[in-house]
Amino acid sequence: MYQQSKFKFLIILFLSLAFLAGIFLLSTQDEISPVEAADQSLFGYAWSSNIGWLKFRGMTQDGFTYGVSLDDVTGELSGYAWSSNIGWINFSPTGPYPENPQQGAKLENDKVVGWARAITGEEPFSGGWDGWIKMSGTASDSSDYGVSFADCNFTGYAWGSDIIGWISFSGSTYGVSLSSCVVTKDQPNCSFSASPDTITSPQNSSTLYWSCEPDPLVDSCYISEGVGGVASAGGNQTVTVNETTLFILICRTSEGALSILPATVEVIKQPKIIEVLPR
Image (cartoon, rainbow, N blue to C red):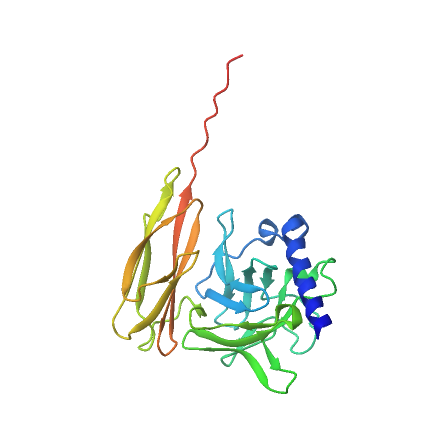
C-alpha cells in the first residue's frame, strides 16, 4: 500500500513539474486552438482529490475562450477542460480507447458515456500513465458509477485511474452545468454582471454585481477567480483585474439546484512609449 501511494505521489509530482518546466513540449494553450464557447457550453468546476479543480470554461492568457461544449443533436461532448496540475483534458479524444465504449464522451439518455483524456498522458514523459478518464462504468467492487445529467446539472463521478482518481461533478460549493438551459421553478433565478466590463490599463478595477430572486430561496453563492463565498441574496464586490478575466457565479438552493453564470472583464493594455535619444 505504501509503495502504491508513493508511486502515485511521484507520478503526480513528476507530471506537474514536467508540465510547468517543459510546457513548450506539451499541447499548450496556443497549440490547442481553444474552443469558442457554443450555445450549449458547460460552465463550472469538477473536483478530484488527487489533482484538484477542473475548470470547464475560461480564458487563456491570450484572451481566447476555451471550454467543453455539448452538441444538442448528437449528444457528443467536445473541447477542453483545464487543470492547473496536469493541464488540458480533451473530451473528444481519438481512439483506440482502452475498452468499450469505443468513443469520446457523449450524453446518452441523461448519462455520460465514453472517454475523456488528459493530454499529458499522451506524452513520452508521462511515466507509463495514459491519461484516460472513463465517464461511466463498473467499479472494482462491482458497483456502477458515472456522470449523469438532469435539470441542467451534471452530477456523479468519472474515474481517471490511480493518478487522477474520482472526479466529482457536483458538491456543496461547486458543480458543472449547461449555459443554455431554461431556468426551471426549482433552480435559482440569478443575474450576474461586471461594470465596467472593459477597462484600459493602468485602470485595474471593476465591480461585480449579482442578485437572486427570493423564490426559490438560494442557500449559498460563490464567485470564482479567488473571490470566494458571497451573500446569497445579492451584492457587489470590487475586484482587481490585470488581464482579461472570466468570473463565474455559482448559486445553489438547499435542494442542490444550481445557477451558473459568467461575467467577463476585458482589459485593454495601452502600448508603452519608450523614449529614444535621437541619433
